[in-house]
Amino acid sequence: MATRPDTTKKPRIIDDAVVRKEGKRGEKLLDKAFATAFKGLVYAQIWEDPVIDMEGLEIRPDSRVMCIASGSCNALSYLIADPAEVTAVDLNRAHVALGRLKIAAVKHLDNYERFRRFFVHSDHKENKEVYKREIAPHLDVESRKYWEKRDFTGRRRITYFTRGIYKQGLLGNFIGIAHLFARLYKVDLSRVLAAKNLEEQRAVFEKEVAPVFDRKFIRWLTDQPASLFGLGIPPAQFDALAGNEKMAEVLRKRLEKLACDFEVSDNYFAWQAFGRGYSRNEDAPLPPYLQRGNWDVLRERIDRLEVRNANMVHFMGEREAGTLDRFVLLDAQDWMDDDQLNGLWEQITRSAAPGARVLFRTAAEPSLLPGRVRPEILDRWTYHEELSRDLTQRDRSSIYGGVHLYELAG
Image (tube, rainbow, N blue to C red):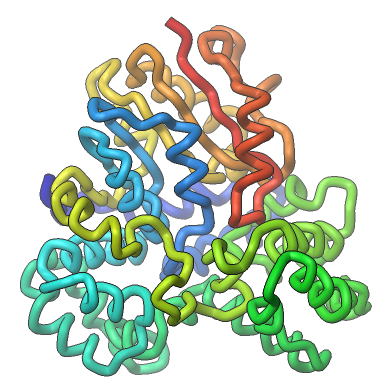
């Protein structure tokens, strides 16, 4: 299905999703600040492991998938599993423009090498001309307007792909600042990537990286909710992530898993965190959609993907009952109050076909649905507790407390 502009006016679409209706004045001010930050590009790369997603979802040739777009890495990667259709929705127009840019590139770039230079290296000067000649003519008006408009630095946004797209956006800038702080403490984060095995990775982490989280300034800074806006963590999610621990300790544990539990030769999330981009080696670890071996399949199935600027609850409300069977919610539920959570699961249950699967992540370890979603809705779903625990352990992105999988009974 072709991508198309969404002309519906939704000026408060992000504010309505983020700002807590019953929050105190200070909480609402923080929420509004996050909503403002979130309206620009946040994630150039999505931070959920699509291999784990596809294993849990068990996508089939008749599967109709709804997911949140974010950087669209996962939506594109799901095509490798051969679903009937994938619809990626997002509140953020920058993410929608990025997803549609990737779709146009898959369709119209000549070969895998050019696609790789554009989205893996993303810093070749020729990418600007490649965009102008081979991609822009096939973009919808809104997406083209986004990429050709100037950002606050005065440069057109398409030059992100000549300066390194993964160093841009809210998360890219946050990781850049983290590297800056590390250098101030005489720590080179990229040394993790030079390790030859897990033993060396752990030695580098414990000797150089872990002690940074004991610094008084870092412990104070990470206790400020606004300091984690760059991770895409809204104030409402901050407390769930911290639990009963200091935030510095939580972040240290998550970074330890990223640095020590998976070989860097097989973990592109580690390359993004410690190297601010993908490896340049031919055998570099990459998301499925960027892998050379998947290029032909991706091109063959690209018309099955649509990226839309929409609220996922509204999107599901427009679908006929029983017409979706795979749902990927990322960590969006961590943002929601009980009314929003019940409204979401009402629409999921209504639009879900028998045997449908829902996969989502949470900042804290446990599923947040029990005790919050009404029993008459939640009792229709089976929670795969053991598999969820296993998927959490093997999720290479390492930043979430839990990956959770539910299946509609009957």
